[in-house]
Amino acid sequence: MQGNIEPGCVREVTLKSGLPGKWSIERLELLDDNEHILSVKFIDGDHPLKNYSSILTVHHEVIDGHPGALVIESFVVDIPEENTKNEIFYLVGNFLKFNHKLLADVSEGRIDRRALN
Image 1 (cartoon, helix red, strand yellow):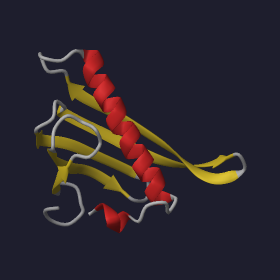
Image 2 (cartoon, helix red, strand yellow):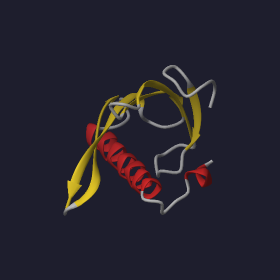
Image 3 (spheres, one colour):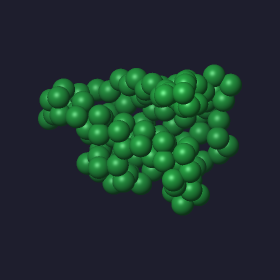
Image 4 (tube, helix red, strand yellow):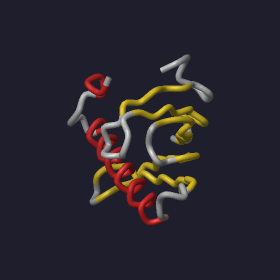
């Protein structure tokens, strides 16, 4: 991570999500703790997700009578000439599933977030 955790900060990520590639550089675009909103843009990397940006929101919900959360994430990404739209959407779908599972595991205490560093 370069700088404080605030919009504009940049981090280099080692990919473990099954995406083709080994690294990504991401910039935090928006972070609103009160509204539970996070927006990130990929600015470099050895993966096919070019000009990828996403916005994630977390909403408090009651699920089966228990407190829970509903996570909604939307994204935009360029489709490289060497890939089809379906190939890129498949990659993004797997990437989001991996990240959402990791978010659930950390938030429910199954994984200590300090172990992710």
